[in-house]
Length: 279
Image (cartoon, rainbow, N blue to C red; front, side):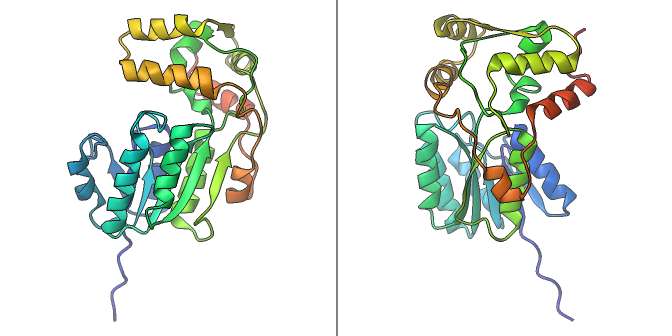
């Protein structure tokens, strides 16, 4: 009797992040071997230390690529391209890239992955719902006021669980190679409307107060955020949040054959878990 061929591990980069953690959890639930890709993992993976890339790729069959801090950062596309080429050289066949909708740097990274020779899938996402529950906006929600450089431009906020479901499908199933999935939620919402939904779900006041971009970035710098992070925030709020993404897309529907999760459902679930309970 011949032994079954071992299933190659799937490397999940950014495995401690919003989407990477969810991708890893889903792969483990499916009984698939999953290798964590982070600086705290064994072997360690660090985007800034290319010497860590090959050990993390050893024996891997597919990779979920999530770049930190963002593909909009200068040089990100070159780094992702170099990693993708190395992955193919090491025998990896399938690459799934988490990309950013409406970002020039993200588009360059997509092109680099597409040119690598791998079987690729692009998962192109908008702002995450989870920014309000486990990201940079959580502290503001707990204080009851989102002080952000935003106006009335709507965004189709997308849920990280939908992103993870699409990524896992692309990593493990046939029919997703060569696809670019633009992922959005089912409706457009302003940040003020998002704050209203959070307030309703949490049962306490949460409002959105627009502030000038300079005031916001100066405050971030004063709080000790690195210059490159401040520059990234300036780009995201000033350039990307200009209405270019104020339209819905059907990526979730095409990839999963179901509707994307609504922000209201997300808000009710998070509120029910007590995440937004103050004090």
